[in-house]
Image (cartoon, rainbow, N blue to C red; front, side, top):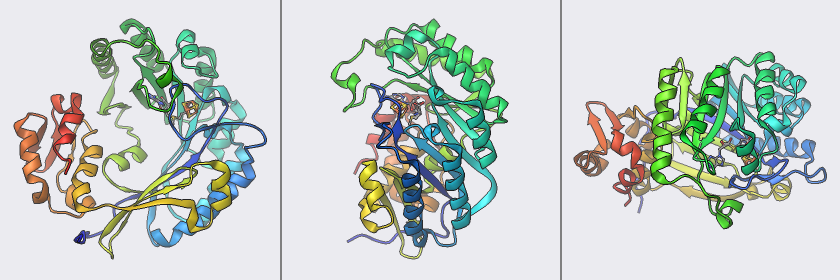
Length: 389
Ligand SMILES: C[S@@+](CC[C@H](N)C(=O)[O-])C[C@H]1O[C@@H](n2cnc3c(N)ncnc32)[C@H](O)[C@@H]1O
Ligand code: SF4
């Protein structure tokens, strides 16, 4: 028997839209992305499918306001301005979208065009996330990227010229044969462009990727840790404040969309393979939804309930771990009362685990804040294991 969760109000609700095609699959990538072929990618059919998919979701989110939109992939910048215009107009017609909210689109430098970026801006996209990965041609080749460093710099110029004051640069570190100096040089070149945000990810070798079956020689754990420490310090002195494991923001311009995930807000996910998490206050439950991953099947099924391949109601026993998995990514942690607000359970229910985490010096629990210690940030898995039931 599961008891009901108690909420006073709905959490904030964001919208994620997945566009699943890429020019070429990168050997390290385990996202739901499929190589683009002109026969497989019918933009019109996909945009229509997204609209149908959204319409079937509306009853689940009646009356709620959308607080951010993220169009991710895959490579959303493969899509034409006309397609994105159609999509955004459809969202505005069907959803309650507050004015001025963050609307991000992921762009790959290999698909960047000045005119396209201007069109995206005019369509209402106000934040670009540019997948640079490295400014070194050697690294880009090793990562199987479709672009060189020159195109990465050029894409950033296009973004600025198009009026994107708010843009993120994605970089990765601990790349094959990468030295500390080379990693810092990538950060320097990123900082020189003065983005509002830098996402700096350690390359992870994911199952079901080419790198998993043919692993490249990557720096040792100690070396990767040194790169990370020095990079963090470099970004700090250059006014990029780290606020999450991989996220650094200038002048507090954090990613509103990602913050909502980490603060355990709700999100609607539409598109092939997209995930969603929706709280139902009246019924005292939180559910997670997954959608069909294969684009062709997704297009066929969008608009019917069968597009959803999995629905999982979060049980009380799952919630402390799920909440902490997100919240403990944040360097400053979160207000403790978000636990009852977002998970619908009094904090007393995880008091035992919180005390244990404190005792092991992985967590600080002060008055109204739960915050990972430096040790907790480094050994996040150890901290989270305490919350496994
Ligand atoms: C969903 S991808 C989409 C970005 C866009 N398609 C591109 O690659 O230009 C978002 C980011 O995740 C990061 N990423 C993807 N796979 C990764 C991996 N195995 N290890 C670390 N970071 C990864 C990359 O920095 C990438 O830009
Ligand atoms: S371009 Fe981006 S989403 Fe596509 S395969 Fe490469 S990393 Fe993955």
